[in-house]
Image (cartoon, rainbow, N blue to C red):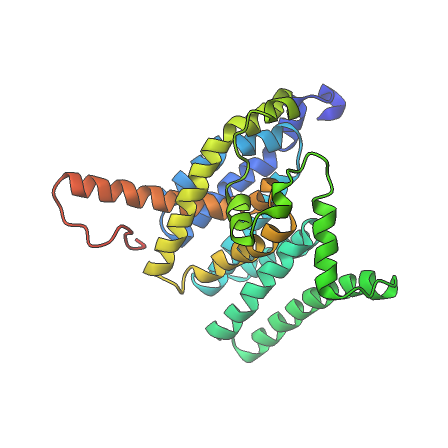
Length: 308
């Protein structure tokens, strides 16, 4: 695309169009599988019209590919454990986990940390199949751990784990345009900061230019989506903890770690955007339905409806 049309926003948008359309498609099916088709459609629409997603595809960030892998991983694991969908979902799960290990290795560990307990809890497979699955998972985990061990030990870095995280934090916060607040805020506020970043501030009009202005004005839309998503996650866990905890846990792991390492980085957080928009759609639909029922005089026992 760049070869034929040159390096410009149109070329970058078209180059990522296939990945974006696939993410929309998989996000719809994720919401449909988790809850129902309406939630899937609304979640996909939120994703399509999100200004931050538009920005990522315009300037050729790989976030769209990461989001596609996230959607495939979560849909596949849901299909495998709660809504059986055949061997093809195991293949999709393994391939997408391997790809996310290459793109965002920390997300791989977050997913594995949630999915291995799920395998143990569900006890879903016959011994032979379970052995094959366990072997493949162990190979993936072993490769990931071995890769990190090579970096830390073979190359001579024997720094204690706590100091490693401190060094990572210094590396993430070294940029001159990173606000000093990221060093000084208490941890709970840093968690809030990474959840709702970016924020609208006037000084950003001097820091950004051209299509970067999309991120400034997108802050309001993004914060509304995150707020609805958190509400949706809470309500979904109340209704059916079993169907939701393993989908939400990797995101919780990410917030827990990166609130410390890089609390300004909304771009890294948006790797989880497919699951964020599905829960945002769930919350928005539930709140709207509750409002309609109250307006008509009906009694509403809970805000969140059933999964049907």
